[in-house]
Image 1 (cartoon, one colour):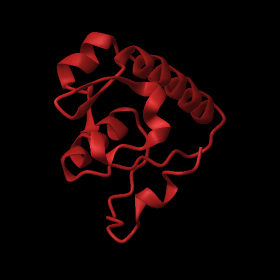
Image 2 (cartoon, rainbow, N blue to C red):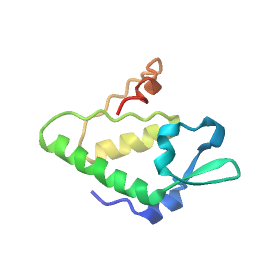
Image 3 (cartoon, one colour):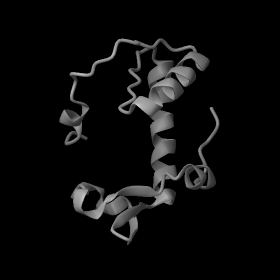
Image 4 (cartoon, rainbow, N blue to C red):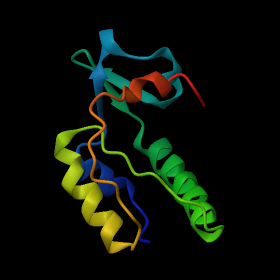
Length: 108
């Protein structure tokens, strides 16, 4: 699996966060700055957390456990499906539109 770099995230626009008035205070350590009312995400910290997540996923896959991939935006559905197939994982195509993913946002 290739490593995501700072420049990859910058080119993808991953540094643009939410409007300041819609932010979650738990995200404070990951906010680099604010510009024009929009939080700018600290991409250095994002790269570190992505590496940690990738390592955790590797450990889960090695142990034979299943991994559920969820795309919360319509635009991401095809990208997630492509990556899952490429890496020979299974994917459930059934849309769980009623499932409120945000119900889990307060859990570590």
